[in-house]
Amino acid sequence: MINMFKHKLKSFFGQKTLTKAQILNEFKNKKGLEIGGPSNIFKPPFALPIYTLAKSIDNVNYSNQTIWEGDIANTKFEYYENKLGKQYILEASELTYIKSDSYDFLISSHCLEHCANALKTIDEWIRVVKKGGLLLIIVPKKELTFDHRRPTTTYNHLVDDLTKNVSEDDLTHLPEIIRLHDLERDLAAGDIAMFSQRSKKNFENRGLHHHVFDIPLLEQIFKKNKLTTLYTLVDGMNLIIIGKK
Image (cartoon, rainbow, N blue to C red; front, top):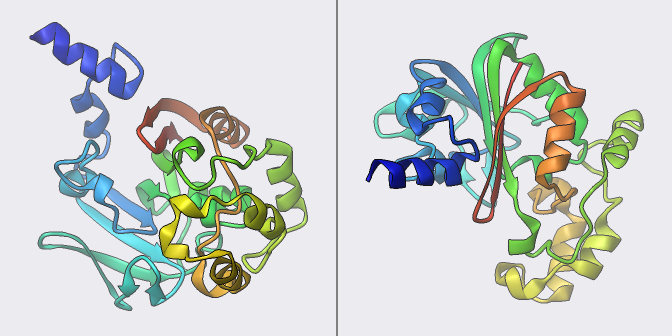
């Protein structure tokens, strides 16, 4: 029974010397910031129940209303039962009102791919985390999503976006997305005409996936930003990476 348990942990966390308790303990009684969300993966019974462990979690969303969460309160972030944090309405890449080194950790699930300038965004996320703090980022595995026909983004492309200071109204990738987006895996988007019309208004709805990631690209981003990669995991449609500042 013990060997079976260890095997499951190895399968989940990708490293046989780690246990689930050791990983989650890094978030226990700590102050965190979530970009996007709230996210089910951070709630029990899912694998990373950080909401129940953290001392407090604040949140950033780009608008008071999103296509995922509907209306968002201006001041309070209710992320779990009887747990409230502060709600910020800010761009993920411009955390203007948040001081540097403010949080013990930052978590984000299925948000980075919606950001037009990924490296600028990561720079901001690192800035607000204390030295020794953690970044936990989850992005979709393209093979299991409507992005499966698209090529994985290169690191040089992300550098080019950073150099050009690409902003959130950028539609550079729109032709590729329209051509390769699998609408059969995105029924809510409607037909090609409806999807195209919605996509042209991406600055309002943020539905586009600007970039397509894999684990090697995430690891390269962390390495270039001097983050120590602690864990990586491919869990169903989720690509998960945890790094230390």
